[in-house]
Length: 366
Image (tube, rainbow, N blue to C red):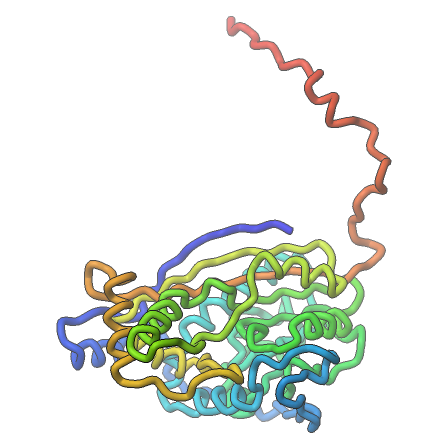
C-alpha cells in the first residue's frame, strides 16, 4: 500500500462584514460554471428496487454480528430531500471535485472497460468526466430515487438501479470496473460491502473509489463538543464517525483485493461561519444519520460553537476553514496474468551484502 498526501483549497464562500451580506454572497457563490440546461433523467434509465428486507436497528443483516451505526432509512430521506432542492446543484462542488479525481484515476488505467458499475453514484459525478472510449456501458446505483432522476447527462450509455450499497443486486464476475465516490462512509458493514464489490468484479477487474476519512470536519466536531460541554455540561456526537486511512488498506486486503493503492487528499473549503458549513452539509445530503445523533441543537450552543470555531480556526479575513479528508483507493481482483511477488526464500542477494558494494570512483574531466 502506498500513500500520497496532497492538499488543496476550495474557496467556497467569501466573507463579509455583516451576516446578511455574507449570506447573500454565500447564496450567489459558484465554484464552477454550470450548464444552463436543466438535468433530466434519460428515457432509457430504469430503476431496480433494492431488496425489501431491511436490517434491524443495532444489527446488520449483511454480516451477522456487525453493528448498525447508521440509519440507512434516514440517509435515504436526507439524500432525497437534498436532491429535490431547486438550487441543489450549488452544493455539488465537493462531489464534483472528488468525482473528477476518481475519473482521473480511471484514465490512469490504460484499458477500455466494456461494463462499469458506479456504486452510490447519485447524480453521476464520475461519469460526466469520462468518455465512452474508456467506459462503454455504465450501471449507476443509488439509495435515493430522487437523486438518480436528477443525474447529469453523459455520453456513456447508462442504466440506473435503485439499490442499497450494502446489498448489491448483481451476480458474481459481472463488471470490469467498479467505482464509488463519497458513498462508502455511510455503510454500516464496510468489510462486507468491499467483499460484495470484489465478488461482482470480473477477474483482473479493478475497483477505484473515494470516501471520507477520519479527520474530516475536525474543526466542526471540536467546536461543537467544546460548546456543548460549556453550555450543557456534556456533549453528544454531531459529526459521524469515519474510517481511518490506516485501516483502509487492511480492509481492502482482507476483502481479497491485490495491488493496492491508497491516496490521501485534504480538501479545505472556506465559509463565512458555522451556519454556512452546516447548511452546505445538509444541502449535500451529508447530515449526520447515526442512530445516537441528536436531532436538535440549542441556540446558545450554536452561538458558542460559532465563536469557538472562529477563535480556534478562523482566518485573518474572518472566514473559517472546513477540512475534508478524502481517501482514494484502488484494488484489483486477482488474476493469473497479474504480477506476483517472488516466493519466500527465492532471493539470490542478501541485504547484508549491500555494504560490500564499492562506490563508483569520480573520473577527472579532461
